[in-house]
Length: 114
Length: 112
Image (cartoon, rainbow over all chains, first blue to last red; front, side, top):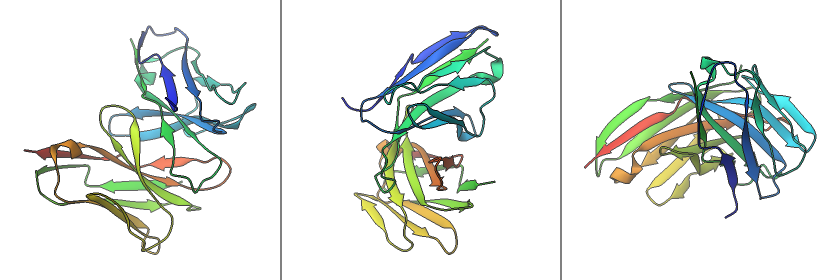
């Protein structure tokens, strides 16, 4: 099925560990982004990419790295996990026509840092 | 700084009731306003609004935008238990970054 695929769905990390959250889309969307969702905070933009080789910071980028080597994939790396990074992470993509129906979200990764 | 404020933050109704969810915004460069429904998992798209005064409808859900007063409402008529969810409002503030600014959401609970 076409859409945005995120892995893993759940992850528990120890403080200081690193890991990569995977995101892939098969809709040939140029724009991809990572959001985190915390209780009472809505969704906040971490990093985004407007195409392969182009990335930029969002609202809450500290502690995260991204790269975009292909149109399909946009992994999010946690360099040294901290309890403050406990959250639900969503990847989203959108086609180039901003008059289109909107963003497609992945099913999310629930991350707990202990 | 762009801001999106939703009200109420939570709402409990009975099946069959009609509800109105509110979203106000302050952004530097408005392009569109989007509504999403979130049930346990990923947000699913409901509406995109770009023009003032034009109602978007899908079944029992409808939404309208007022660009002069900087707000939007989402109406749900004849609510059902399956409408229970968090409803998110987001504004696309334009520019090359395609950034969405989200409100905190309204948690709607529909009791039988």
